[in-house]
Length: 219
Image (tube, rainbow, N blue to C red; front, top):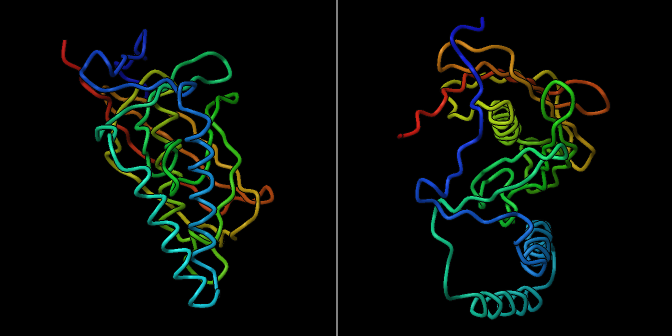
């Protein structure tokens, strides 16, 4: 299926196109710790049966913490530059809903190169629940979309999702180790074909295929 498509020689730096770019290693450890605590707080708040007095006190404490953090904000579209284990560079939005390192809603998913494509181990807790005790299908689709797009980018062909198909093979449980893998399967001009799957205990629970359309960057 490969027709007239070549990986870019060097991945473009978004800073050259006016984006703010933050190297991942420059994200303050204190901010990373705060994001982890807020992520834990979200899970606790979603499942607590604490007394009203405790809930009121907690709400006041959160309001005070929020007030402490008010002030300068990063602009929408700020990018983060990360590095794969093989030294390759990757860019993504710093608040990405699936992999953004400063987004408490994003489950910690650190994709890395592994043989034919990318892989990551991750766990989804009760914040991502759909049916009782199971991961919401929309979140599985989001994880696959992120992995598939990242696989195309890691192969030197960054682009946007034009089509995403997800097949749910079996229920995916919460609070257990999961694995996601993705790889490029072919190209056709600006189209990049990718496939991937999510596994639990070695069994595929969801798999997806997508067509990514490579970005046409201004000269």
